[in-house]
Length: 202
Image (tube, rainbow, N blue to C red; front, side, top):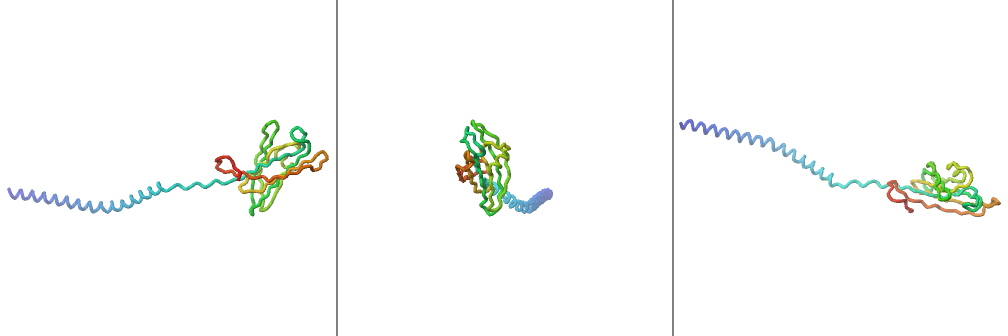
């Protein structure tokens, strides 16, 4: 009877030892795996936190553009809107930079009696370093597709760099001789491609 009890006690002890050995073995296998995954998880978490806390890159500033609105008055006045006489406009555009510059120009016609006239498309032009060109009566009539007569309005010039824009106005009386001459240097408006706010003069 005591032998049978001793045998059961030995079997229980053996079972306990087997469970302990298996538990220790599993712990030794799992611990390196968790230790390996831990830094990876911690590193991923830290990277995610850095990405979330890192400030967003500032957007690139908008490219400035310069606009010149140059008044023109061309042709022979009949005395109804302006004094009788022949009017001439010569707009001189100069590129003061050391590089070639492209720019655009369009023509907006102003009609009497507070009426808006047609506006042309943009026409492209280009000037080399220190070059200049002129826009005169014939150019204005041609681009606006108007018959020679009497015409008023604006030449609008747009460019990415500043230009020298000077308008020369002359008028002749009945004898065809020059009776008045006026020059005007046109300042640019600074515009933004983002379109935020009205254009401002520099």
